[in-house]
Every structure is written in C-alpha cells, then in structure tokens.
Image (cartoon, helix red, strand yellow):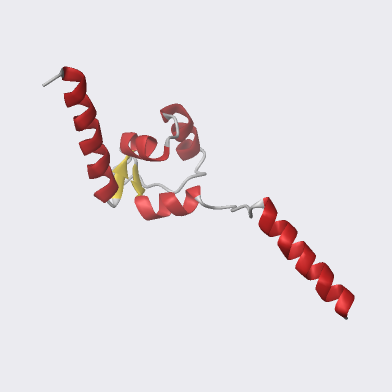
Length: 95
C-alpha cells in the first residue's frame, strides 16, 4: 500500500477512537476541538475551560463538558431573529 494512504487511514482510525472516548487528554482535546495547543493551555491556565488535573500534572477533559463549553453563548440565525421580531411586532399591533 502507498504510505500516504496508510497514514490517511491511520488518521481516520485515530479520529474514530477519540470520538468514542468520554475523557480526553490534552492533545486529544486539542485535536477534537480544533483549538491550538497553545490557546488550550492558556484556557486551562486561566480556568476558562472545564478540565481536571487529578495528579497535578496531566490535564484531562470530560468530552460532554467540553462540548457544552464549546456550544455556550449560542447565536440565533439572523433570519430567525427577524421572524421573531416581526411576530412580536404583529402581536403588539393587535393589542
């Protein structure tokens, strides 16, 4: 097999394994979220991202808490906001 093909398949397998884990290491969390390692380090050092350090050195992330953190401060699509505002304006006119 071609070396590039083998490396691509290995990369896909690693991603599948990470997807099935509940607790991620620092590097796995970086790969999973797409956050650079340096920025992830800043987030953990400033305690802005949920993580644990059970032995004082290694950093671990609960995947569910990580996903919840990533999805905080949701934004509504602009079209939905306009629809809600129009509905609110119609309700006010009918009062």
